[in-house]
Image (cartoon, rainbow, N blue to C red; front, side, top):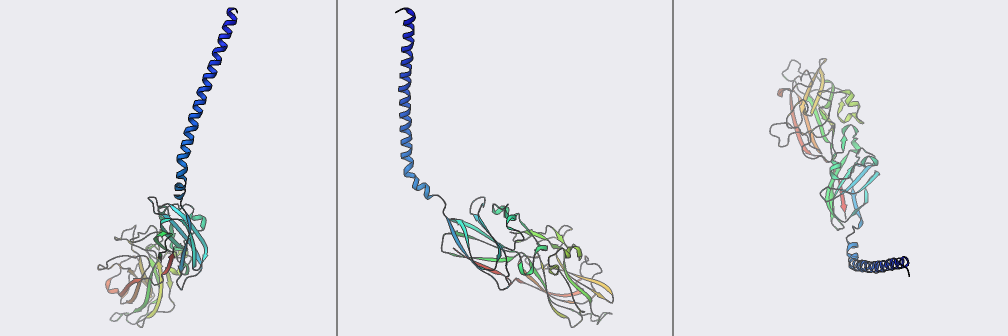
Amino acid sequence: MDNKDYRKMKSHMKNRCREKIFSIISTKLFVSTLYKLILSISTILPLLPALSSCTPVVQNVETRISMGHRWESGSLDVFTFNDDRMGSLDSYQHWDSFTGGDIGIRSQNGKKHIFICTNGQRERQDWAGVNSLASLEGIQIDLREERRERLCMTGETEVMTGSTETYDIHMRPMVSEVKVNSLRCDFSGKTYEGECLQDVRIYLTNVNARCSITAEGRILPTEIINAGHADYDDIESFLEPDMIYRKLEGSIGKEGMDLGISLLCYPDGSTKESPGTPFTRLVIEGKLDGETFWWPIEINRSEDTEEPGIYRNRQYIFDICLTRKGASDPEDALETEAADINMSIRSWTEKKEYQVVY
């Protein structure tokens, strides 16, 4: 065997040795890896039942809705939020037309925050941006879109799904009612004694037009309707203009008239009047001997009131006697001697209750 053949044989043997060694190493690595995999599987398998038991269980939650006697068919939106830091949305359901009865809410088990809205002034797709309780707070409703028989009403409560407890959700309108029970004129001792007020109009000025659908407590106006006077463009922008403006038939004299006029407005919780936050007022407008006068009346602004201003779901009830000529401008302050005003406040009786049964 010459040197050339010897070198070839030696090189071949080295290559065979390398392949053998690599094969042995690969086999050991494979066995080792396989062993670790088997060990991992054997460790995980006993945990699978426990892991599966942590998966949230979706269940039907039956909600019993008991409607008030004046309720007419309207939309219903139900939001179920998780009790977590973000208040994330768990589920949402919508009814285009709802008159009462039972509904089923689908949600995961656990503590939840339920928010219900009727006649929310939106179609189902318009709620798409609501993914948390905070985002719901950004939704606004508009007084001009309200209807007396289909008021936007809201209610909310904390619940524990899966329990047998019964929860009551009190539905309340965002609006309040300013009601004029009676109006009369007594100009005794004046040169115009015995005259009757003609062409009488009763309306609200400086009215809050919009507010958050979740608003509570002292709510500040963000947009003003009828700023300082009766703006007929503003009034005609309402679906129901008589919500803030009424024109009376006939005249008002000493005998007076039982009116029962109901005007509706959103809350005005302003504590100090300014050009940007004027107080909402009830205005009586009429003519004496052909001249127009105004009696602008502040609503719940007396010094001794505990909660000055207008709050949601309340009635501000007035009995008014005009005793002298009013102001020559609707924005002028009313002199104390110009009218005897009796006002009472109570919670609005037109409440509906939703009974939620889990």
